[in-house]
Amino acid sequence: MNPAGARPSWDPRFKPCIPTITLTGATAHHSLCGLFAQADELAILDCASPGETVAVIEYLLAICFASGTCPSSDKEWRAWVLDRRSLASAAAWLAEQPADSWDLFHPAQPLAQNSELAADLGESGTGTAQLVIEYSGDYNQHFDHHHLELQNPLPAADAFRATLTQHAYGPYGRARMSGKRLGAKVTNLAAGRLTGRIRVVALGQTLGETLRLNLYPPDGPGRPLNTSWKTGDFKRRTFNEKARPRAPRSSADLHSSLGRSVLLRPELGPHGQIRVDRVLIGAGEVLDLDPLRHLQDAVYSETTNGTSKPLWPSPSRALWQQAHALYSAVKDDRTGMYARLRSLLPYKRTMPGAPYQLWAVGLLANKTLPVIWTHGAYPYAPGMAAHLYRASRRGSDIAEHMARTLKHAAIVAAETAFPAVRAADEAGQVARLDARYAFWPAAEDPFHELLDEVIDRGVEDDDPVSAPLVAYALELLTTARIQLLQRLDALPPSDRNHRARARGVQLFDEAMSGKRAPAELRGETALD
View (tube, helix red, strand yellow):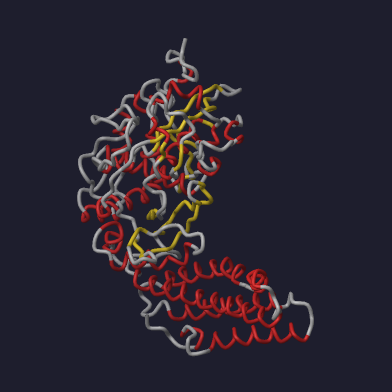
């Protein structure tokens, strides 16, 4: 008799199950081997979320490092990118690996999973909603989550990608299992190594170019690659005591680290397809990361207390407002990914658009509750970092100035229209007239168009920024003023409300043309 929830190891229907990854490009599905062999024919990964796409890219990078398919120096990295070095050696390495090492449902060494959870799967396992970060909700085991018991089987490939996302982005919390057998610490879920920060991926025109851009001279030997909890020539943590963070043993180890203990239970679908119907998630490994060696893509920003930390997802500040931080890193960083990008020869425009994109991705969470993926792609062309920094910095400043003014205009109008309002109701009355909530979403597209225009003008233009900035500022000015008027026009007709409207509009117009207004709004050119 098998343990509850365990799969009969002799059942040939589930063995081996080599995961596939869905892509957009040549064909619908590719094995991992085929993916590397045809990487320069494939456009993009087609995943369920931005975080899942990043997690898959991380895993592909890990395979490159494990197989030695990576540059040995920054100089060689430039040659890899410019000469479009083939990634076929990674495919050849994969083809030589034992199939059991890549079996998603291997009884002892399931791919990217921990078979030690098998005895607990029957009692503590849930439906597949727990595996997918967007559906899992709060991990807290002390609340009743009926949605986790829903029968919603996932295709094996989808479950594999969701598992990789858990390893990279799983938020902290409490696992939904008892821990009596493995130890109490199996329920203490630490935040994944990408949780709480913005991960920046340099995107190329093809999947192959994207991988080459994000490869780097490896840290340590190629192996070990974490194909499962039971593989590797080192001892994994136990769950009888608090986890001791360990330093990654190599770049392959870093990018394939098992931030969760996960176990998937397979079943056969109505048409004989293999899918996952139950999952169990416990604590995984905790890494001790060196910022210089292990966070090469991180963009550092100061917190309110003056300390510096990698750029983080913010519920109150849109990601595009931080684009200047990315360009500042390319412009100034002496090491890491941004210094390598800066080392590429200035881009000679042969077609519209930027050759590369800086894709920033983060998971916005409310403590242990995942809320939404935040992401944005920002164009980059070698040799244009300073221009793009200036455009994004000034573009953000202009939008900030208008948003502050809209708030002040709403306050002045509310004070005039509702002079006797109770203190408890004051914030609500101001919010009725505050156009910022409509302005910020409307400002994002013009900001991206500003960056695209700067790229299109190219390095051949002595000043590709000033004219697009003026056009951008005037467009935002029109948008902000219309939105302010729409808010103020909602006030019922009366002498007092007419005065409120006039005062709000006057404040706005004076702020847009006064001495403190951005230079672009005053018909001048900003030098910063």
